[in-house]
Image (cartoon, rainbow, N blue to C red; front, side):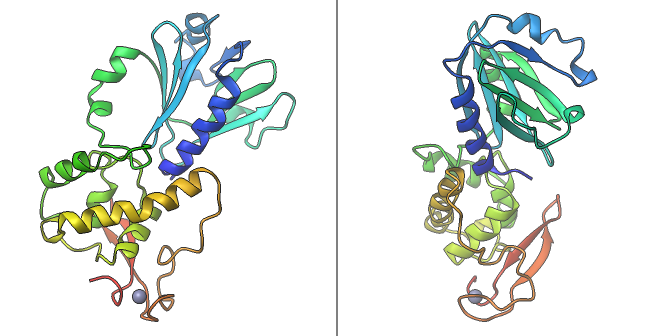
Length: 257
Ligand SMILES: [Zn+2]
């Protein structure tokens, strides 16, 4: 599943292709959107800005209209120069926006909706989102407040995945973040100090920021390394499903207490 760093990277590329360029056409090839008349509603409007929050991406058009997208498990944004070959099949495109120089394509994206700017502020799911882990200035107080309002018996690894606590962390970074801070992902949040909760996020942010810039991150410390010796202490890395979603958590019992 694409995590916040992937979406921030996509937002940067989409922004570069669309903001300041005249939009020549907008298509919504997927039958689900055939009756939505977006091409008519968006005709002649420029894209004012493109931004990401957590795993959500927003294309803000002139005249108070915003396209909201979430890629869920398998979606992808593609930005291609005019005439360049797409890396996924045409039939998988849900949205195609063309300028004189680029084609911006959302593939396989199950969440794609056109909303007014004000609705993006009052939409309950969006308003419930926690601070973006990749925001220029991380809202640490907001993150801690939400974490403390959450169920204190929840494991910290599971709580980190909840986008209402903190937006943008997915399964890979959840495991890496806990390792970097030396915190056992199974420890109940009640037993995780504020200092530790902040260390988890402060440690992983630079890696996610680098990844959003497409600077190759180093090899993972624990993610998908179950059964292999920890690269720091040689203890065997473990893996087990965690939380309601049963998403696999990877950790080193030697380094993480
Ligand atoms: Zn270790």
